[in-house]
Image (cartoon, rainbow, N blue to C red; front, side, top):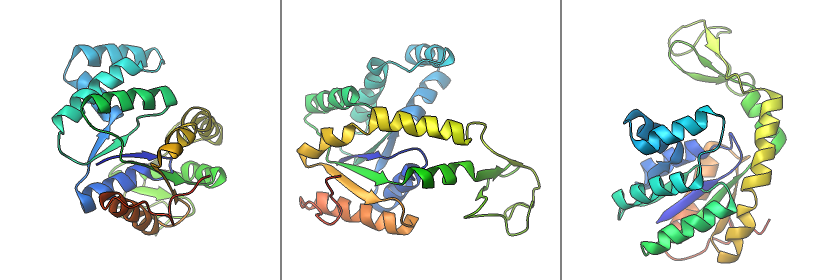
Length: 228
């Protein structure tokens, strides 16, 4: 089975992908991780990709597809979750061609649907302990003692430089412009499943599990699959 997880920044894709790995034995395939690994190993593709990213440009689809093809071949027979790809309709079309050449296809596309305003609050309010990396949030998960890490007792905290309302708004705009068109691409194929990302992590996981079980049994889950 090959799944794609879609959703705007901070929708919880990484958390849900980890859960699918633990509960169902999926292997997460992250294009970002593959690019970093290639650079660390000193490969030609890694050097080329790093030079492109250092210039502030997007890595060409041809490099991503080449890496993805190799990874899918190496993971033959395993259930996969694609993370970070596709992001555009041309990439989705390229992915379909890559999989078809290996006698495979995308099994389902799960969209974690979250309100933009809620996402801005999620992202802007998050911070981590500088010592141990424990994650917190101003409103939903503050430290038990103000200014003191629950895990290690550290008193230094950091926030990502790009976790500002302006940067988050720009990232959301890019998602709606580039990635949201994937929904009407996959919907006519009967592969699109939308889950309520405004629910708690466990509730979202249960909805995703329902989709996975339905796909494994060859049955579409009507309660979760929506047309909007």
